[in-house]
Image (cartoon, rainbow, N blue to C red):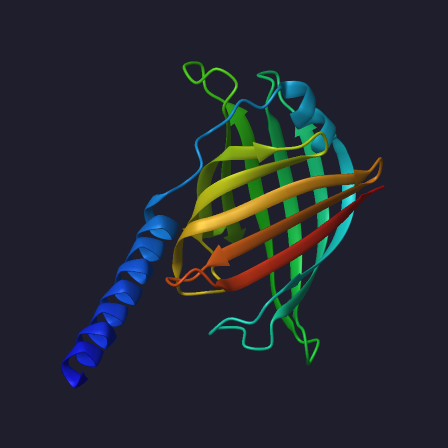
Length: 201
């Protein structure tokens, strides 16, 4: 009887290990495929113009209290049916309100000639004209008012590299854009969350 209990216990442990292994492989190696994004949806969600914004970033090992940011954003349509964004960011400690940094994030939403209507997002951030952050990825989801991206990259507010970064940009009304970044940890938990909201001037 004790021997059977031992084998049942061992079998349960092996089953749990197998499930955990499959889950970790899934979140680290499976990514949704790139999908077509019509230019009309891109220009609807990221309507060209000037915006002001506010954001909140969860705490990291570098900025333990998290950050509150103010944004001045310009969205422009290019001659190649792409969108360029210049996002000037001023970041403050969420608790003390101390100024932490001023920087600029430059983002391109672009199509490639051999990828039909697959939409790619390329982002680079600078402080004092020095590159401090970058990310790259593709659109993998959409609704009539939003576009979602799978991204890989890093932010200077953390010393970690992320291969499971997800960004959803939503036009909530004629004047407002919400954008949310989630960064999954090794075990699939939200490790860093960045919520940004922009309002057209």
